[in-house]
Amino acid sequence: MSQNRPHMERALFVIGKQNAGKSKLLRYMFIDPRFGTFGNIPYEKIIKLISLSRDRCLHVRCTSPHERGETIDEFFDKLDRTMERAFDMYWRFNFACALQPRAANNMPDTVTTLKKFQMRFEPERIRVIQINPRQDEDETKIDMLSDDEVDELRNMGIEMAIVDGRRSSASNQYPNGFFLADFFDFN
Image (cartoon, rainbow, N blue to C red; front, top):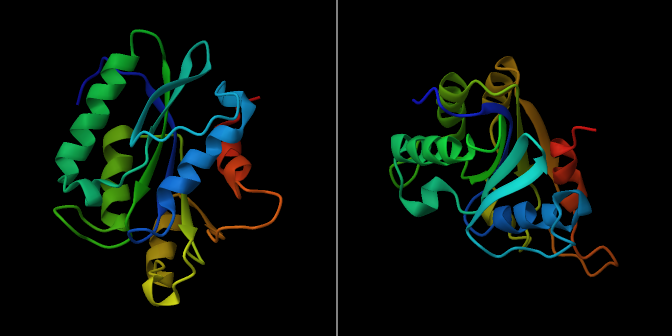
């Protein structure tokens, strides 16, 4: 762990099984004009550094480390290197990432991941967003954290919320984008 990195201010994790809509929710944050993207939705898997203010940035990973087959150390080391690169311009670092709820492909479950994340990066705040219903509304694939897991995360000071991930035919074609973006509003 490097000391030449900005302070981890906030971290947002969107939790769901594969194809639940995690990436879509993370990308929808960029409809918010405060990100300076003019409402353009980015489609990269990793959204580099978005300036939130003169000394504050946001880094977004739309693909979970589970889906990339990373170990927890590889995941954290990549984040560390991104933070080190950000240190030239930013003192405060914010992070948003997709995660799967259960251990898979070298990565541990959400609770274990967030315990280790909290110890290594010492963020001021962490928020977990679970998706229910999923974007495809397939109830057989919903995998919510158990009450015990939620209680464990809350005991760690982690904020919890559930959002509706269904695709909408309503006028709001980017559901929950502003809701997620608001976590990174420091005004």
